[in-house]
Amino acid sequence: MEKKVRLVKMLLMMLICVSAWISAESTDNIDSYRRLLLENGLGATPPMGWNSWNHFFCDIDETIIKETADALVSTGLAELGYKYVNIDDCWAEQERDSEGYLVPNKKTFPSGIKALADYIHSKGLKLGIYSDAGFQTCSNKMPGSLGYEQKDADTFASWDIDYLKYDNCNNNYTEPTKRYPPMSQALIKTGRPIFFSLCEWGEMHPAFWGAKLGNSWRTTTDISDTWDSMISRADQNEGYANFSGPGGWNDPDMLEVGNGGMSHKQYVVHFSLWAISKAPLLIGCDVRDLSNNTYKILGNKEVIDVNQDPLGIQAKKVKKDGDLEVWAGPLSKSRTVVLLLNRSVIRSTISAYWADLGVPADTSMEVRDLWKHKTYDKAFKNQLKFTMEGRSCRMFILKPLS
Ligand SMILES: *[C@@H]1O[C@H](CO)[C@@H](O)[C@H](O)[C@H]1NC(C)=O
Ligand SMILES: *[C@@H]1O[C@H](CO)[C@@H](O)[C@H](O)[C@H]1NC(C)=O
Ligand SMILES: *[C@@H]1O[C@H](CO)[C@@H](O)[C@H](O)[C@H]1NC(C)=O
Ligand SMILES: CC(=O)N[C@@H]1CO[C@H](CO)[C@@H](O)[C@@H]1O
Image (cartoon, rainbow, N blue to C red):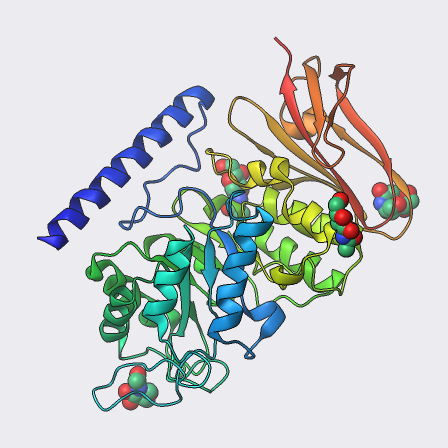
């Protein structure tokens, strides 16, 4: 009976998504990136939330997870869309129980995961968990799910889990295309819509095969909190832009904004690139201790709206001249998002011509600056031209006038 209700709910959800898709399509007349959502109906726009790894690594417990949920709500970040609270590695006991089930770590998660899910849900948020398509997870501190896919998927569903990040360590040298499908099927079989995040590190180009299995796939190895690491992941991820869209997203890894390794300007670049690339926006800092500067970045609704645009088209590098780049992509309502990026350390001037953006040169554009929160009085024709500091960016939405 309950299964039937779930099935009807899932079908309804799919219907809503498909109709949203059709209406977005008819207004914008762009069809090349479209495809139907995965059977779980999730990921119509990139997921938003938080994950424990980039700040806490293995050093997590249920108090941190609960306090993070509280902070997402009290700061207003939850309201802006950051709904997933995702536990990463190290949440379970080293050994399965006598019946082969995963056991939450008795010291750090003494109340169990179901109780935590109830708490997270009571805040209007969603709970994510982590496992690995191998014998053990990457920390080697808990079992992986290889060979236990259905058992673990059923366990996650019984705990009311909403999201699974599925890592790639200790994989017995078996191809990912053999190890990821069983978990995808197992999750679908539970009847609970669980967002499936493939963390395959881009090794076998999951962008080419991931959309049939999951709602997002990592295109890169792990990010670290430096400019070089961040910008190189954005570059690698860009190469797969054609394969991203509603239902399945390229994932250049989680955000480092707020962790302290980059300057404010560089974190603005980081967040802008992730937003324009339709990457999952998973906060990786301690949101219980958020500086005003960090909040200004993570809480920039105009930039978030670019990421969550219903068209779901990943921007591309449309022009490159040494360290000077223009990234751009279409948005709904015939708008275009443009990022001017100076990757060098020298102050310089960057131009984006309408031809670079695929727009007729004589089109008059209204230009909105998404970081200055200001619309220019004058209309722009043929080009955008700005002088900018080194390692910084400017981000704009262009809207044709009349
Ligand atoms: C690991 O690899 C070996 C050798 O290829 C194989 O016999 C074994 O079944 C694999 N184990 C799992 C759990 O896939
Ligand atoms: C992406 O699609 C465009 C337009 O269809 C095509 O010109 C381009 O070659 C494709 N790029 C890749 C990397 O597949
Ligand atoms: C953040 O901004 C608030 C209000 O604008 C201010 O009261 C507070 O002192 C600021 N906090 C920091 C850490 O700068
Ligand atoms: C010019 C440019 O756009 N990108 C970087 C930043 O500025 C310096 C000075 O113009 C350039 O030489 C460099 O390629």
